Image (cartoon, rainbow, N blue to C red):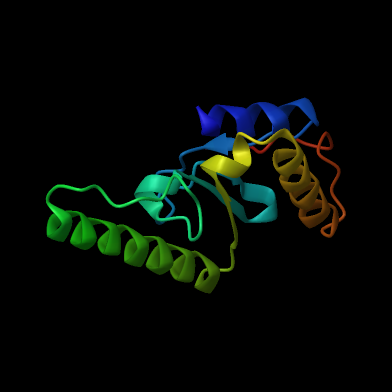
Length: 130
């Protein structure tokens, strides 16, 4: 799955994290508590990745799907806004990006840079209790 690809790539670079933090809005897929960084791995179809070929509209029940997708996108935005207001940094990687080795590598480098800004190296500590 795309989430597994992202987790494996981060772990291979020495990053340690928590999964699906129940106490955070939207239950982010990957959480670096010490760095207050929440990562979402979004499926292109369900979360409507703009410009992606995987983001197509089903041909049946179009009104239902428009409403469903609009609600998903609105919820994603609301969750990100709430996390940011609570002092978290939010990153999103799309399914198509996770499946592309070069783009996934670039994402992992971005995460490392974000974490390094706080002076922590990935292996300096465990993330602590969930």
